Length: 340
Length: 292
Image (cartoon, rainbow over all chains, first blue to last red; front, side):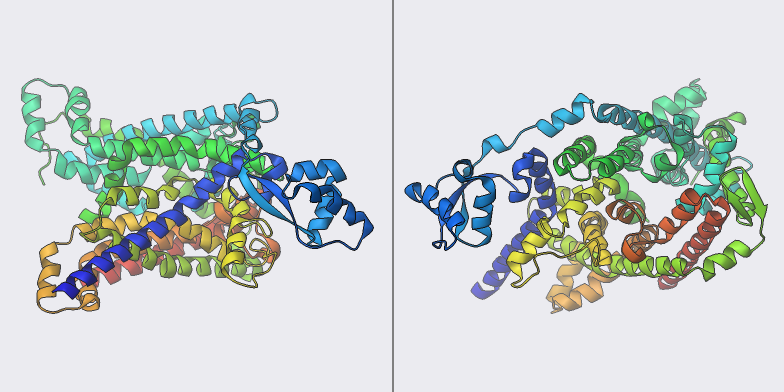
């Protein structure tokens, strides 16, 4: 019995160890991203995470008379800071001495003065790059699309789930068929349509096509089939409740978790959408973050810190939103699959 | 299922109207239009000449198309065969009754799925840097003799894409598996344990049949998703990459439709992809239906 308990106990420990390792691997890129955005450019490549003060340590005596200068300069106080050594004999010489393994660097205390919010300030000041504008564009595009797509899908799903009418079966079939159409098939004809309607390079052209996702109607139809009792609708009508008030005041509250989940899914989808705005929009001041950041990569390809700060500011809002609505989001995501 | 019958006749039409109008204009019409569009060679949205089925013929004769097919299929296979077993394994670890803080771990594992692919691509572009990237730096510590420069984004494009996709999607798929595992009746597993079934037997005979519907759904979702890979290589490599090593089907469509401005040719590619995906969906449906 003892050994059984021991096996159970140790496999529990193993499970925790494995989970913790995987959790760390998942989190490391985020942490790395954070420090990359904070590190100053002078030390960006010297460290992966926190910048440290570096000291010079003597390894071997140099033959070369040039390099001997480093030796004599540093020797009196072994372990002097690298910046002090560079001041005495010049940074080039110190580097050369390091490359020839005459000295080595040793990491000391955390170099707080080598971390700053300069990249965030540069982005938010908007002098070089219209970051704030792009951020607001993303907020506008994602919230308008999410709110109206959720409303229209909930209305459509309600009609298909709860009403007997002529084309109900036909409409339901069309919605089901549309689920398997890949979005990329619509790129070329969709672009042509927006051209004909004069909606290219406008927010209408970006938002309108996103307001009627077939899978949203499908999800709301599924959840309303079970969650909304028909008798309740009929008794509300007898009490003199109008159809529109019935929908907003009784039906929608019944599918609240689904509303939250779908709102978040659509918001997230728009926020991260790249190919849509990339094709539809041409004016840089209209670009949402995903397109703007891709451009930032092209322009400031060597300013890694700036790029990383922009990435952080772009993913932070959806992370925050997710933390707030976590439960609804995951239950909405899996409801279709698990109930089948 | 009961349907309302006491409503005025306009009500269902009123509720479905906004969806139906937008759906018809922006989904049904372009879809039908793309059939005829695929028979034209065009330059931009205005100029086009009729070429019949030549677009399809040219697609199949273009070596770039086959490169894109090869790359996309490799990525797709890796998604199903590496990502999903890892996701299932992680879900099973997390589903152990003696593991606490499930919500905490689930939150961490799921979080990369929230990051848009553009942002993932930018992040991994630096993580996979040949000389100073964190990945190579770590590998240099772990593997003795690992080269000072390792060119993920030039030579090892597919492994780089797969690595990034693991970070994004393992946790995402784990959420589905975990939900399925949690809906299994614990008594069933305990009954199998009392009958003397070992861990492997329990997995094959109790757990796997119970999660089969969800597993089928997750497999389909990741095949369809991975076949539409675009943003990740497009941003990570700034295009198709050296020797088209990162060219995918949707990127091939994008290049032809929006860089060469041939919307007709792009429609033809779109239909080839769509028919392929529908084929997979039909096969998938057959397979899962037969098991029922």
